[in-house]
Length: 456
Image (cartoon, rainbow, N blue to C red):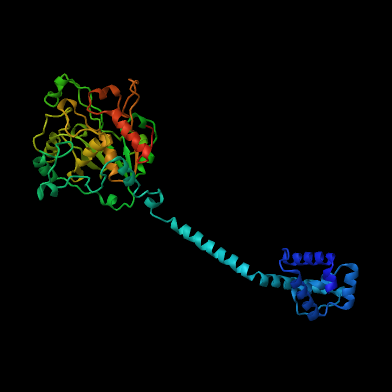
């Protein structure tokens, strides 16, 4: 036995035979292989002196004689002549059993891995059955607050969105500034107005784990944009009145509202970011509409949904007086407006809210660096559009904008709104610095605080 195995050809043959059985190179040492082979020969009586002698002379060992020895079979074999005929079919199942026994640990490991993969795939499949709100977007909770703190000093979400009666009835809340940055001097009329309006948010919005908001502007960029379907997918859609002020001669300011039909001054227009007829570009959903008296439509149901919150943005004390007169059906206020507001405003008082002037203050002082007390001749105010973005930054977990921006100043013929043919020239008489606001919005885009759905 040893004489045969010590030959080079014998060793090569043994290695090939073991590799053929195990389907892999031999990993055991030469001495252990010889010891197992010798024991197998003793058990089965296969290795005689004649076989060893013949193997040494030829340098070969019959494969049919060594296979049972290598596998440790306890069944005696027949002679080499009859082995090929009768032992072959019986040997294959035994070989398979032997290989399974040797690889039992690996098979169990593979089976365990397979079961883990099946369980994980089932778990992942079940995890997709979230409510639509959770599944349709990645909600970056806390990201808006973190990035807004980099842009807005002393950023906080502690201030309520809308004014509440208890702050002016039970406790006299002091205000440092007059409208539009505070309520100083307007507390009496505001108290009466808050007694017939509400301040809470709808339950459908309060229970949202992630508030995805779209602030829709009035810019010409929305025309033919086909953004309507996309805008309707957001949880909260905020719209607002126009930011432009028509060119009105100073002599007409006092006449507007006194004799609007007989006055030679320009007629007033109801430019309140219409939805009807523009649904394909601007959508049809409106969760909040920010307005002021001059931008109010006499029939809010025309451009809004039945559950739309109508949020008054007060710029001056006359705005409170107009709202009170409308809701209480008192004598209409006609003076003090740059454009005649509607004398009939068919709105449900339960849907009316009064925006907290705190957000106008933040927009002016923190984003535009405007002084709170300005000379009468140099007054500048934020636009309602920038105010709507500021409101969303204090309320939403995701803020996207659409329809913001103005045409280049050299383009005198380009219209600025998607719904009417007025140009940038109309902004000359306004109290808004649109270029200054554009810088603020670009800064938000650079920080990733907001995302633009159109182009800016």
